[in-house]
Length: 392
Ligand code: PEP
Ligand code: CO
Image (cartoon, rainbow, N blue to C red; front, top):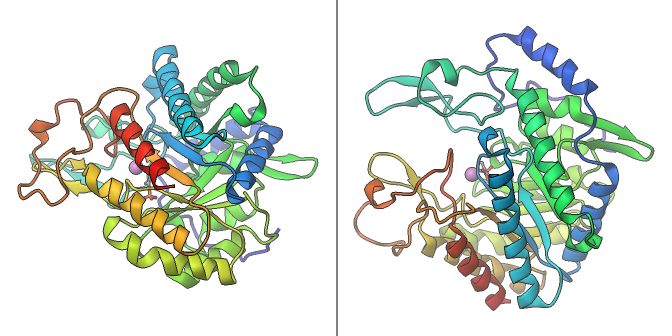
């Protein structure tokens, strides 16, 4: 394990109004059983190593922000059905089993670009930081961060995992589904670290990722992830320099284990073609082994009239095209897709051309139910996966 200087306070943490309550909850979580097992994480590592060799593709997909209210039989079944359908589609197109990873069973904490949100009527509220911290309804009471919600997050994740295991119990390991979430809130993640005969692991999910806002090489999140043995992913946004990327790869994969580290490029259609060939080449030349996935969602977000976010489907397709070209150019396997998807026919991402003249209108998006970022509907997700596998 790499020894790093212990960094300053972690970025993007909830401003708990009652820090003693947070300390009590850390104790409760430390006493709970692990949510996932070491061997499940090891199985995912093996699958990701196969993706690293170009033998399998990865589809990582799910909500931007999972809701506690969706920890119920119906919504969980719909999400797992959708993930299975996308994995089946990839298998049918490639002839190899897909590595299926949900943004699920723990995707309850959100980083924010601003600590507050100004409503249309001028009222300023604390930002919604995911159900693990507060609730999205626009009232000061529910936006107040509540450490007790971390226990509910644990319980909801346990419920979703029970569903996932019941569904895949009889399947061979390469056809199981895996869980993943952004490891953001230190007070939740740290107490759930468990030791195993051969190492330490984050027991909060199979794969954990570091977001684009918290990937500072000297920050808490990278330091923490370097100390656990799960498969780790890092979001790579347009401000990532080649030296950042090389350094991250070495810090997070010092032993050079294939499958241990995934970089999820989320550069935006405009930058993917320009930036990615150099990033990929420099990491391959000077860094540790990395599997590259494409998140074509987060770099292509635009605001509609009224302020809500959307994403033009055309830009999403273009970023996938740029990603495949860049990886192919460097003779590396395009590892797969990282997507925000809904299990029902939402109208959150825009079907109009990216260069349509008018600012899109929220009124034209009647089924917009995401608590955070706009997701692809099942039809849009299927079309995008088809576009990706056609390019290959
Ligand atoms: C996300 O995946 O929802 C997210 C916040 O992504 P990023 O860190 O890439 O902005
Ligand atoms: Co998101």
